[in-house]
Amino acid sequence: GAVVSQHPSWVICKSGTSVKIECRSLDFQATTMFWYRQFPKQSLMLMATSNEGSKATYEQGVEKDKFLINHASLTLSTLTVTSAHPEDSSFYICSAPPGGAYPPNYGYTFGSGTRLTVV
Amino acid sequence: TQLLEQSPQFLSIQEGENLTVYCNSSSVFSSLQWYRQEPGEGPVLLVTVVTGGEVKKLKRLTFQFGDARKDSSLHITAAQPGDTGLYLCAGTSGTYKYIFGTGTRLKVLA
Image (spheres, chains in turn orange, green):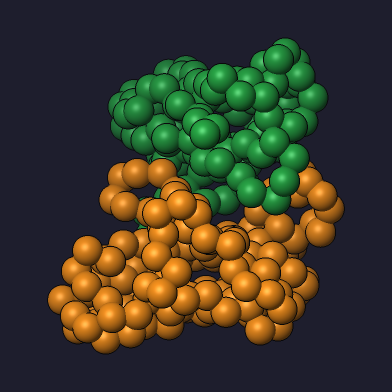
């Protein structure tokens, strides 16, 4: 089945530094990927839609300069948390619709998530 | 703004009991999905429903999509400790963007 590989699984960084999270579709092409943020014991909050070859679409309230998204190929999307601060600590998850159909009735395939801790 | 409210928010039951989780919205969705997420992992798709009134079964799990496609339910029969996790419904109005529900955290005690 379709697999989305996300890494790192966890990262600890110092306040003020930047962290890059990668999301790869291993056996399918993903023209669109989604980045979510999840706080402890809460649901997923969509941050942005990553589009291959074009600018990402950010949800209201998400800082574009803070969360840089790059979707340079059909199998790779990256999320860079710039100048990270403790309040950016969270669980970040990417997903992609492997079916390619519109709408994606086959569901999303999710990465395993990245736990970011900013100290 | 589309919202998906799930109830209950938390549920702790004994092994062997039955339970139902609800996912409600005032908006109409073209399709709705249910996911289960375990701690430290990404959500895993359980089922997709697209037709109003549709009922799907997955072993001990029964999913139903409301006739008006505004709500859905997940019923688990004879719950087992392995069913423990965060259950999320997610809906779309026809785009790639899914809205996730508020989540139901289930704990099944042995």
